Every structure is written in structure tokens, then in C-alpha cells.
Length: 415
Image (cartoon, rainbow, N blue to C red; front, side, top):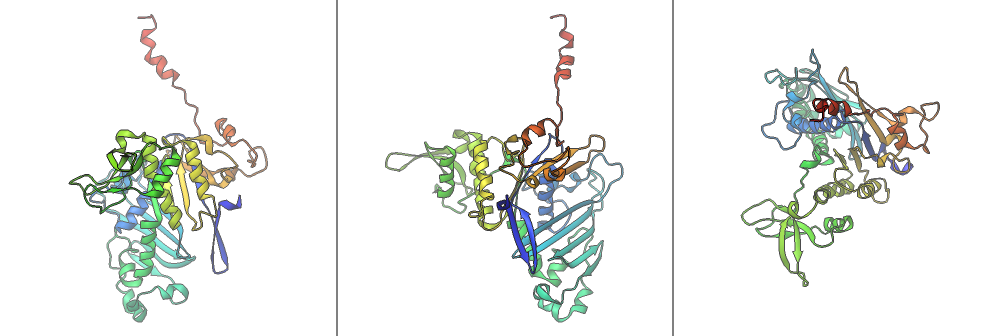
């Protein structure tokens, strides 16, 4: 399934990436934690520090109250590590961050960034340990072109100022941006801001369109409305209405007469199913990722949306003629319909399994089993059947009978 691969060349080296990944595992195994980690890293980078945010703009509590991040079961707190690799403007960026946040819910802990590093095209740009920063070889190639004029003209003097920053501030968005390379810093933060979209809670998803319209204005996005009709909405249009006296557009079901004149608009939540409302909110994010080559990460991708609609979205990401900019879709699900070798490559199917004793989770791919031997996985195998008979792990045998037997125990005499 070569169509599922994105290939990006940097010099003579070619890098390959998957166009999608689907994550399986039982409840409370850690699937959502993976998505939450991406959301948290994004917000830390955009804030530029590891202090708590003043307001929450995401349902992910840990992204704004970092004391939620450490494992509550650890007796001795350990630093929390993040790492990500992405392409931006034809260059490979690798950013790593290790943070000491103390114990779970320790609100008074003096947080510190233990380690922070940035590589571009596998060349070290900077490597920071606590307050000490070491710069890489920035004098040649693309990196030299990204340096600020002041740094390039007086490098020795500039280096003296790059270590005077707070222990809880990112070097990337502070000293590095101000002194060394505003352009490189902006490319990294720009990718986190516009290139990475994370939907942490399916039931909280709400996209806003048509902002800035005058009062009582009606805005119908033709692309989204066409997708909604394909989805099954045929008796009315879906659009965004700015109620009188308000400034935020509201997703609405729009009804017109035979001549096409607006008769009435009602909040979509009052007329449409939850699945329809969620689809209309999700679709703009899919369209944006495809149009820009972004990465879309969705928690509970299958919540209340028919599998055929979801399968069509997945196929768009796998379609080289449409997905020309290398967009990626990552999602977790409980729906076994995606356990299909004709839809996903083996390395696109991921599993998360939690160790009940340690509380730690392990993530692995179906391709990690290899193709030979008793545990091997071949393309023609019935992935769904094998998953439910626990060939791949990441599944639990759940039996609520003892709970109900105990509940009903006092009623054994029929009273």
C-alpha cells in the first residue's frame, strides 16, 4: 500500500511518513493520553513556558494545569518528556523537551525545564540543559541563512546573553527567538499553531466559521453544506448564523421556502442528531488539513458518526491525487471496522496496552509482530477476529456478572 506513504527529500536523504494511524486499546489504557500529550506539548510551545495558563481554551485540563501531568501513582516524581518530528517548508524539525513538574497536583512546585533541544535536518541547532545552552554549527547551509542579522554580525557578544532566562521558560520562544533566529523559532511555533490540530474531546468539538459577519447574517459554506448533504442532510441547509446582539456565529439548521427565501434558522443542536452536528464541526478540520498538509489528531473519531462516512474521510487521506500536500490523520477508536488490511497498512494500526501493576502504557504497531512465525501478521489475516481473540493484546476480558451477582445477592430469597 505505497499510496499510504508520504516521502519527503532533504538533500540526498528521503524520509517516509504514514498518512494515517488508528489507535486501539481498552478504556483507560492510555489512548487519549497520547492525544493529550500532543495537545499539551502544543500549548506549552505556544505559551513559551511551563507555567499554568490563565484561561482554559481546550478541554484538556493537563494542557493548562501542568500539575495534572505527572503520574499520580509514582512515589518519586520523574521528569516528563515530550518529543516530536515534523516537516515544515521542506525541512525536517525535531524538538525534544524534558520538564520537571514535581508530583501529581503539587501546585507549589518550582518547575524547571531539564532538557530542551532543536535539530533541523538532523543538525543540532541548540541543546539546553537547565540554564546552560550550547549552540550547534550554525555557520553554514540553510541554518546560516535563518540567523538574525545582529547574531550573525556579532556572534560572540550575542552568545553571552542567551543563558539569562528563567528555568521555566522555553529557550525556543525566548532567548533563541529574540537573539539567535526569530525566523526558525517562528517556523516551529507556526507549525504547532497552524500545522497541528488536536481534537481532545469529541463531545466538546465546535468549529466557528463566518466570524465577523454583521448581525443576523447567514453564512453557508458551500463545501461543508455539500458534504453534509452527502452525509445525509437533505431537508434543510446547514450554515452559520450570527444572532442579533451577538458576535459569535452559531451552527444552525436553515430552512427556506420554494423560492429559496430564508424562512427560519434554528440552532443545529435543537434539530440535527449529535452525529450530524459533530460531523459538520469535524469536516472543516479535515478540509483544512488536506488543503494545508497539516496533521489532524482526533480523540474518539468514530463517536456517533457512521463508519462509512469515516471510511470515506480515511480514504481521502490515502488518496495521493487529493492529499497532495502530505496531510496526516491520527485517531483512536473502539470501532473494529478499521482493523482491515485493505484499508490500513500494518504499521498504521497501533495498539495501547496498560500494565495494571505499574500503571504504565505501551504503544506498538501491528507491524511489530513481523510476518513469520506463530505470532506473525500477514496482510491476508483477519485482523478483527485475531484482535478479539487477543492475538495482538490491548484488549481486556470484561465480565460484569460478579458485580450484579453481589448487587442481587440480598434478593436471593425472592423478596
